[in-house]
Image 1: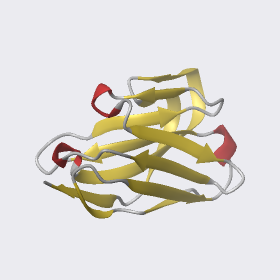
Image 2: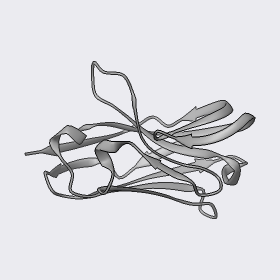
Image 3: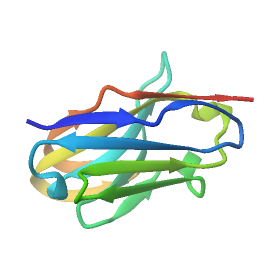
Length: 130
């Protein structure tokens, strides 16, 4: 069974930086497509960034040039480096792992597609104050 645990959230002033980490337990991490998804209360979840098992990366337009997604397969850990944070980045950030390819896997529009199973972390709160 795959479990995901996020860390690194917190409160920061606008223009500041934070790094989120997501540590996985279980097997198969190297084959997972991984993503960060955020949710503002009252709104739908929004894909922020995704990275495929081969290293393909996609970002949502709102974070391009400010956020960097990366993965360390040996440590079974996903990262999100967030710079020049803005108040509109305030949200709960979730780590998502997609496993078991069922069709042509793609990393597009900050999302992973073509997988049968998704695993989610419990979320990390990021608050950016102006």
